[in-house]
Structures are given as C-alpha cells and as structure tokens.
Image 1 (cartoon, rainbow, N blue to C red):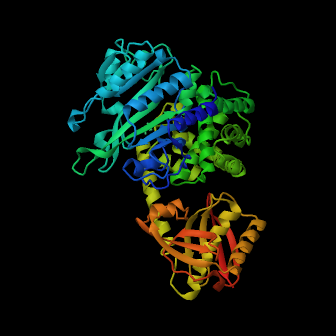
Image 2 (image 1 turned 180 degrees about the vertical axis):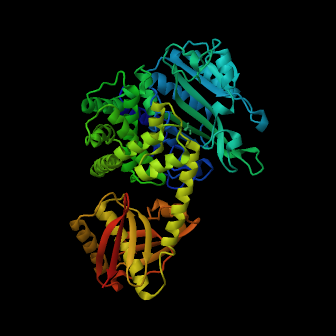
Image 3 (image 1 turned 90 degrees about the vertical axis):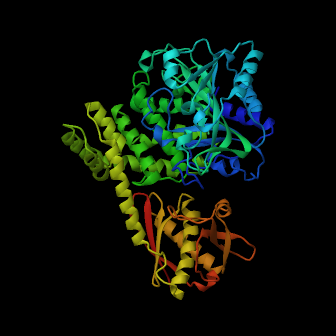
Amino acid sequence: MKSGEIRAKYLEFFEKKGHTVIPSSALVPENDPTTLFTGSGMQPLIPYLLGQKHPSGKRLTNSQKCFRAEDIEEVGDNRHTTFFEMLGNWSLGDYFKAEQLLWFFEFLTSVVGLDPNRLYVTVFSGDSANNIPKDEESIGIWKQLFAQKGIEAKDVELGSEQRGYDLGMQGGRIFAYDVKKNWWSRAGAPENMPAGEPGGPDSEVFYDFGTPHNETFGKYCHPNCDCGRFLEIGNSVFMEYQKQDDGSFAKLAQRNVDFGGGLERIVAASNDNSDIFTIDTLSAVIKKIEELSGASYEGNQTAFRVIADHIRGAVFMIGDGVLPSNTDRGYFVRRLLRRAVRYADVLNMKQGKFAELALPVIESYADHYSELHEYEALIKETIQKEESRFRETLANGLREFEKLSQEDISARDAFNLYQSYGFPLEVTVDLSKEKGIEVDEKGFAEEFKKHQEISRAGAEKKFKGGLADTKEETVRLHTAHHLLLAALRQVLGIHVHQRGSNITSERLRIDFSHPQKMATEELKQVEDLVNQKIAENLDMIRKEMPKEEAMKLGAEMEFGVKYGDMVSVYMAQDQQGNVFSKEFCGGPHAEGTGELGHFKILKEEAVSAGIRRIRAVLE
Ligand code: SER
C-alpha cells in the first residue's frame, strides 16, 4: 500500500469511531518551549491531556509532521529517519485500554491487512520505586484479542532490555519491559520527568519481518532487539499519571490515551519489507538520486538514505518557515542540507542539481501538506542557495580538515571548521569516521552553546528596548513598523517573521527572516501597501488576552522573546473589523494609521544568512 492510502484509511477508521480529524501542527512548536521541534503528535495537545477542554471534543485523530533531531546520527540504517509522520489518536478522558488496543489491532489486521501471527506486543512491567503496578489489564486484553484470531498469546516478564538479550523469546507473544522501554513521557523515564509533566505506561506493537537474528546485538532476539527483525509500529500510551512537586506520582483527573504510530513503518510492514526507504514516498527520492548520480541504491544504501532523509526533512522545515542559519532551528536545516550535499558528492551526483531532489518530496506529500506547494519556489531556491554557499567554502574547509586530521579533532578545531568553513558537526564527524579518528563532540556542543549565548547577548544589546523613547515621532514610526511587517508577510510570504527591531525618532529598522535580497518591484509593492493602509486610516486597537488565545489568532511574535500568560496584542483594523496587522506588543502606538504621513523605504540589506534588514522613514 501507499503512504497516502494508509494515512487516509487510518483517519477514516478513527473518524468512524467518533474521532474528529485535527490538522497537523507545524514542525515549529507554537506553545511548547521544551523542544525546538514537534517530535510527537501529543506535543501540541499537552494542555488538553492535563484537563483543558479541547474545542473538537474528547476523541481526536491526525497525522502529525514530526522531526527528531536527536536521531540524525542513526540515519543510515533501514528504519531511522529524522522527519516522519506520526499517525495519532487521542482519548481526552474518554475511552481507555480496552477500546484502544482493540481498535489499533483491528486497524492493523483488518484495514492494513497484517497477519496477526507477525505481531508481537509489549506492556509495562511496573515500577516499584514509584508505586506504579504492572499493566495486567493490557496483558488480559491482548490475550483475548489474539485468542480471537486463534493465537494463544503467552506473556513473558523480561523487565530490562538486557534480560531480553539473555533470555530471548521463550515462546512469548506479550512481553513486559520496565520503565526504560514501556513508560512514555516527553522527558522519558519517571526519574527524568519534571514536576507537572504527564506520562504513563505504554503498550507497543512490533511487526516481525522474520529476518535472521544478528548476534552482534546480543545473544538472543526479543521484540526490543536492535537487529532489525522486529519493527515497532505503534505505541499506545495510557497517560494517567502526573509527576508531583515532591517527586511522587499521582493520577491525573482524567485517564487519557495518547497513541502514535510511524506511518512509514506501518507502510513498510504492509509491504513486508523491513527497509522503510523502499516505501513510495522515500523511494521516489531514491529514484531521483539514482537518476542524478548514475549510482544505484544497492551497495550505496547509507549515502542514499542520508540524502533522502535529509532532503525530505529540509523540505518540510523550509515549508514551515525555518530557513538555514547558524543558530537554533536554522542550524538543523543547514546541517541536513550540507550533510546531504557531502553524501551527494560521495555518489558523484551532478553539482548544482541538488535542489531537484526536493521535487519528488513535494510531489509525494503536497496533497496532504499543501504548504509544500505554496512554498515550492522558496523551498527550491533556499536549497539551491545553501548548496552553492556550502560549495564556496567546501574546498577550503576540506584543505583545513586535511591539515587537522593527522590526529583526533579537538572541540576548538571542530568549532573553527563550523564557524569559518561552514562545516556542520556531522560533516566533520563523517569525514573523521572515514579517517578513523575521533571528534570531541561534547566539547563542540559546549563551544556551540557558549557562542550562541554570546551572540544572543549581543543581539539583546543591539535591539535594546526596541523603541528608543516615546516621542511622538518614535511612536508613529512604531505603528509604521507594524504595518511594514504585515506588508512584508503579505508580499513575500508568511515565512517572514520579525527577528529584531530598533526605532528612534528619525527612522525605523526591522530585521526579518527572508532568504534573499528583495527585488525592486517587491520593495515598491511593500511601500505602496503600507501607504495604502495609512490612507485607509486603520484604528490601532489594543487587546489584552491570554497568550494561548493570541497565538490562536495568529498574532505575530518576535522569535526568541518570552511572553507572560496574559499578553497585549495590537491590531490595525478598519471600521468593518478587517484586521491588517496583529502583533504581540506593549505599545505605545498612534491611535489611527492616518496620523503617520508618507512611508518610505531607504534601504534593504543582508544582516546574516536568511535575515534581511530594512530602514525606513515617515516623511
Ligand atoms: N507520544 C507517544 C510517542 O511519541 C505516542 O504518541 O510514542
């Protein structure tokens, strides 16, 4: 089956069971400061798992775009990817174990058509330290479900992963593992959870590809063995606990189900092929790499998989407005693209063609994720630019690397390769692996953090206060600044966000995300639009509201700025209530845009990769 087909069938199946289909959130979490990227479908739902009422009811389902940066080093085997789609269904204090396990089993066996004899499951073996009992209820439900298929399902208590390797399958079908394997929270095991965090025991389903066990992983095979015979295809979390301030666990007011299953993996199981890169969406990219490089996937799997995974991840990131840069999220996009370019070179892929790899990704996914069509031009252009930028420094960087690589690479040298030659850490690590030398990755991470802190402190100084004073001229320029940001987003696209601002009584200055120089025509359009909105004399209206509500309204906020629970939002709107601009902002502002006078852009220039700056005045 194809990915789109399984996605559609899953959503339809859970819709029939009373669930509302909700859209996928962006890869950039909106109200979750704990992670840089959305890594599971439940992340955007935390407030509702904790008891807040969800506007779409108690039963929800979706397919969520996910990105797990921590898996970047694992990419290259037959099943790990950084980007993936997670099929999810949730009960917010509604149904619980009996319905969840039955429905997922029914979906896998009746809708996807998997042979139940190839399915193995795991449950929670209990955590005496925290008084959380073994999940006997799930064991009982699984026994019944398998019995209905004529399978006698024996349960085996393994506890630790090590005991799995020591004891093996033992004729079991249901395996109980400890907190390391069968407990789920955003922070992992109970001891790592901060106070207030919800979590709970889970039950995973594994598909058995029947491939021979590889003893380098451990003596015997078991469902959580890493040899590749078993693939985890779905995880039902019974989220009913919350960590307390004193470190103990208490039951939440409601019992939730948080289910997540990797779409790619379910498709791979339905094809009975353990290499997830053979499924339709990824094999389309593999085919394109073969076409552009003349190399074949067979025999070059690692390079093909890295390129396919990374280009797909980068396409989705750019589609969500994350552009390559040297900080935070942008650095991940840069890493993905530059590492993929390196592997493309290893395959002798034609230079300058790299961006063409985005096409099969966009074609495979745009039906469901329309943002990819919408930003197709931006995606291709950004990738092309990043390839050429990297190439400009690659030769020098490689020369420098050759000099350094007589011995292990220190943190300082790895950081210098990154900062002066544009080598993301993985490029240095991959090159070092080829040479059989080590890189001080931990030291690099520390240097990187130090550098980020210094540049952040610098940025704070540069943009201190935003507004230099509250003179009338300054306040009018502040209002013009709001109109300008809204106009930029309208003319250039919604990837534009404010990255800094500085306003004096003479002029305004805005830094914003945008990958390239603005064309003269675009500058004129922006200027005209601002002047049109001045002529319309929009009201500047201030509203106080909870942060959540402001986010739902889509009010613009500055990247990296922390806001309190109650925020003030300024809207520029006409008499009919049509809103042109809405921003998180404390003011002060002109009462109406008619007071501003004529708006004029003086200069547009680059600040750093992906960030532009405009200076403008009111005449
Ligand atoms: N949150 C769980 C996971 O990510 C299930 O959705 O595995």
